[in-house]
Image (cartoon, rainbow, N blue to C red; front, side, top):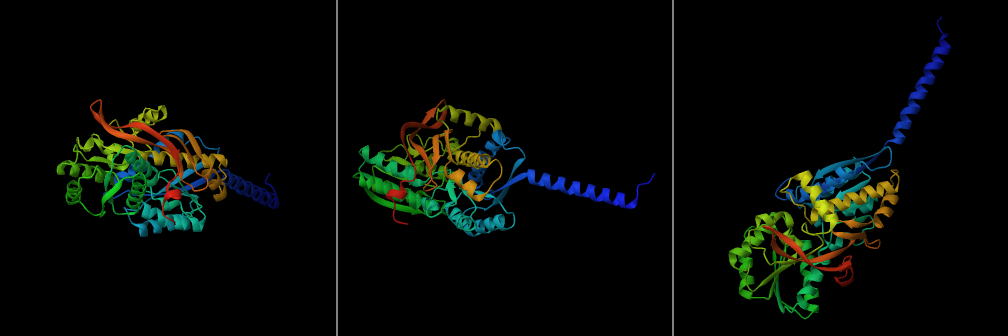
Amino acid sequence: MEKPRFLRSGINRLLVSFCIAGFASLQASAEVVKVGMILTYSGPDTSLGQLIDRGANLYIKLHGKDLPPGTKVEIIRRDDTGVNPAVAKRLAQELIMRDHVDILTGGQWTPNTMAIETLANQAKIPYVVMGAGGSKITANAPYVIRTSFTLWQSCYPLGQWAAKKGYKTAYTLVSDFAPGHDAEAAFTKAFTDGGGKVIGSVRIPMQATDYLPYMLKVKEAKPDVLFLFNPGGPVATAYMKALANIGISGSKIQVIGSGDITTDEELPNMGRAPVGVITVDHYSAAATRKANQEFVAAWKKAYGANSTPNFFSVGGWDGMEAIYDAIRAQKGKVTAAGTLAALRHWSDPNAPQGAISIDPKTGDLIQHEYVRRTEEQNGHLANVEIETLPATGDPEKQFGPKH
């Protein structure tokens, strides 16, 4: 027997209502957290962006499923193509306005990061910096935290170390962009305060490919130490080969610098030039800490036995861990205020580089630095940690020039 039309109509409306309610319920229960990641994925500096990206991906691979029920994380990647603040700013605008991301991350280059952080602060979008080391990134930037480092963290204690070791004269040679300026200022401040004298300083243009003329000036000046900074990657290898070709490697001039100059993944390409070089950095792939050995083993399993993580890789890993922990802390119901509060008080006592935490006042990462000497171990070069320095945030906030 056919049901009356009014009854069929009422049942249909009821079914439609149930469907709409069910769909709305599904929508409400499926929390998708959008994370916009801006790195260099093309061009000559691709390898550095890849190291950060791989570190972040490794964390997701191993721990990405550990999320509140119904919560998903969508990573939206964008390519800044290199040191290009205008491109980085445009990409950040698109991620904020079009893609409606909840969190920004990446941050490979200081100039690019400075452009992005301005937008992040204006839009009140938390920004987790995984790679850039310029101190001014976190100055007056309430929505920015970093899981990377600053050049003052490594180069200021290196200047102190060199002065305490009795070196009297130094020559500084740095890449001519903001992190290089920070490295130069930090080392010079600490070294001269300790009684040392800087007898020469040169900033090498970022586009330079012939480093021998600059190295020749150092050789002629005959300083006790040559302080170096470059952005790492293949550039670090080019610097080391130039030092060997000019005769500085293995000479009476002690080569020192930030960890960038003997970055772990490039050591196999450097020949014997870096042997004996002293660096200060927060990470070495050769470190014997259990957490680091597990991290390196997982890295090699994921990316190949001949692949080696470096400090950028750890910044990517730590940054993604901080993001996921912030999502977990909010049980997947992410807000900008909640994310920022979680990030500003984030810590990990068992990170690959040792215990780390975010300074809630500045957003910088508090971590140990290590004095390292490049040595041969088991037929391979390694950055061997020979001294652990006290954990610190960014010394620039105390000893650097006024903002």
